[in-house]
Image (cartoon, rainbow, N blue to C red):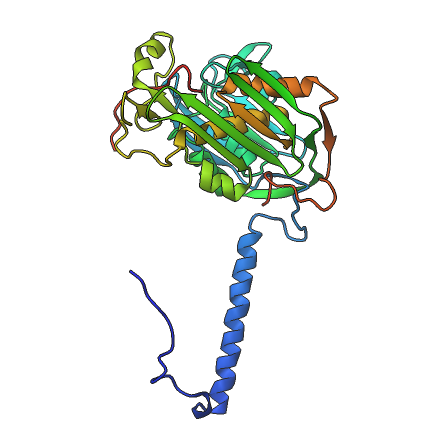
Length: 371
């Protein structure tokens, strides 16, 4: 339904016919309404920012409050609650694995050195072994919305899959709010290209001074996927609109193999785009025509967030997944001549991409070549 507002020329009163005292009242009310409108706009643009400080892309950020989501693990099938907590400047992203019977809670830094496995998901752990799996979606949401410091508490072996995308974590971050901290942010600036290749797959990080850029390309021998490519400069509004809702996907043909290996025990139409031989089985269909490659971009953002600081670089992935993402990031960080820490972008350039401020049919489907 559309409603149009305006003055009809034949019925609108002429200004000279209105008593002067009424004109004064009308003018005063118009000015007041304009002031209130500007005030509401300004407050909406600075909500969650401490008064007295102007946020800039160089300020570290954290959450204003706590927020929780509850779901199941896509591989374990077990119920799990994830809670996001604020953290002090310099903390980074830390996972807190709690609820382990008879054992103390475990803290694991969200760092590429903490990766213990990349088969079907990114798994973080320490010297004691794996601690928390399927970290990529919540890490992508934190990075995509510009959160530098947070504690991610999880009471199960993996992050809940929710609807298979990053949307639930974006909503949780919005619920908690993002605030700036009185500390400068350090970026990792890529100084030269770093490339890792294996067969037809390759990944490359190259210099790009305007924040993080993601370029993903996938090729599947399936009529619904085929060759897809997607490129994006990672900014909060773009992440929300173009990426956050893209879901993980898998093939019905791989279900038995995954089950026998102990994977995808929690996958279903509610959290996975299920692909049959010639159609998508989910009743609601696709969210994007190229949802598959967009989800690969989410995974890449989450895996690259393990750098420990926001990247100033462009990442290109061709036929890649978690293993390739981790290999490229490790190669970059291992070559000290390929990167440097910077506190501010190049003069005159604005840093983009980090902190501007139907039925429940249990049909596991998470292909081994999909990560």
